[in-house]
Length: 309
Image (cartoon, rainbow, N blue to C red):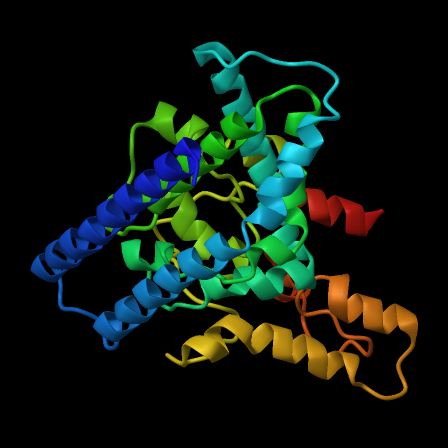
């Protein structure tokens, strides 16, 4: 075991301790403010359990992604020294990388089958931040980090930026914080913005993909502000209503497999069920996000303009 490995283990242990402490404190404060919702404690326990197992399973196979980054380092076009300034640039670029990954995760069913785990709770708190998939290194989107290494950033710096970004996002998962100062809300992702992202309300679907920065959503037309007259309702379009960890983790993979076993469908339909958006169906019997938004009259202006043309 190298010194780098020891440092990473110590950082991981520290973060887990911070996260679990935050879960307990938030739970206590929430109970002081209002009556706990049915199943909230059981859901929180499920989330924490999924998170601990995610750290174990993903840590065991992290060599798939980490190894690719260090392999790419031998092919980089130059070397960018790691300073405070270059680390800040790396962080911003990696946050853009996260936006791309996150948007793909909601628009490509293969990646959604992994990411749906995080969205499958009908609650919204720090415990839900720990509700993570066990298969993130097998979706392919971790390879979006490769360009950062190829242009010269140190793989360790890229990995560090990812850890900091994930730590920031943990603290977005709360209802105890309403709104932050307007300038902060304009640039950074906040609990308000991320509540929208976790909501199943038609107008909030597929919005606010940003990690630390919300500017990417503003630039690429995926931003949606939280409305006082439209409180977020958390969960999936069709909730799975289970505390079974195996079903939570693998229910969408099972659904993908069932669709692949359809008889009488062609290659195009099979690829659609695998890489098309969630809700895709070869016969139009299901609803995608666009279908739901269109039905409720909440398509964003850009999408309306595309349809009009």
